[in-house]
Length: 111
Image (tube, rainbow, N blue to C red; front, side, top):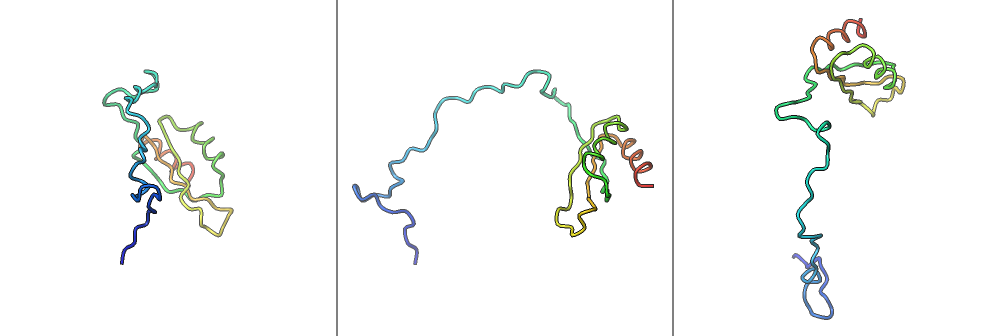
């Protein structure tokens, strides 16, 4: 048996939501305010398609410093595992725009 989860308005006997107008505004949304430099041009994509899983005792700032000093293309990092019981080990997903940067990372950090 289903019951009405909304209480009736004691004044009118109607569902209390009936008279509520929850719309913010009918005004059009303002145009995008980003400047031309911060906006990608049509067809331009920044993709980091070359990734590697990296298990290390290094911290995120240490890894970011190495990447900033050694990698030529774009890169990104994601922390993979927060549930590990070993707090001295971090597992990162390191993503590279260029395959050559990934191979450099593999040669220098994984050897």
